[in-house]
Length: 150
Image (cartoon, rainbow, N blue to C red; front, top):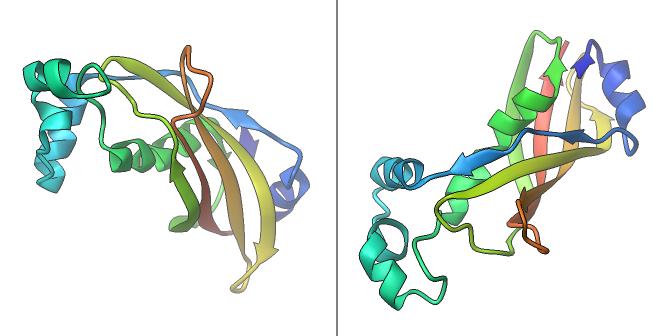
């Protein structure tokens, strides 16, 4: 979906929903995230031990890995024709269900509020639900905040 202006974002407020494609969260991605963040806890990177000892039945993705994919998914779903866009933060993050290696995730975005900020810019609070294929509960829910300068 293309949004060409602040008015387009305002028109989508509370109405439009955008859904990404499914993305597999494989062990290689989990290992790379562990290397990038120096978080090598065994429940993420030790496949054999996680299969034997973890209550999840195998290795799981870092919660912050799941969260870090939100900007990528938003960019996939919504192309905002802007001078500049920035991630401004997040509210009310909940990591509800573990994401096992090999799971497929997608994100569902709803622009909950769009407010004017700096000259010509708007701030959007997106309600994000990260769904796990075949699961009843989402992996994550969050309010993700962006600012868009036109």
